[in-house]
Amino acid sequence: MSLELQLSQLPTFYNRVDIIQQTAEQTIKDFDVFDYQITFSETEKTAYEELFDQILPLIGNLVINDYKKLMNILYRIDVNEDLIDQKLSTSNPTQFAEIITELVLERELKKVVIRNYYKNQQNET
Image (cartoon, rainbow, N blue to C red):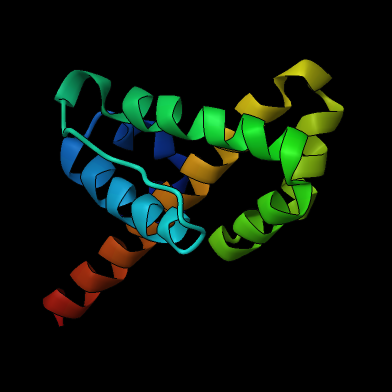
């Protein structure tokens, strides 16, 4: 399966505990740089929701209290600014934290899918 096809099917990975576990590890690593603690219990049915529910209040707090730090986190995670602008222009401004949280988790998931794709490509050669 090509990388482009895998990335176009990101929602299919939301229920794969192994992929969400790796996404959690990546998210924990990226937020730890900024002294934010994220934990993950590996509960299969709520894996994505668990991460979302932990990150949402952090993002909400940063939006209100430390926008510069939020931008630093988004830069570190490599969330595309144009994508942020695009999503925000078509959404309700009161959902800003939810939108950013979704984009953060989507980017972290993409990192994992890309890493796994290239790891599998190396193993096949």
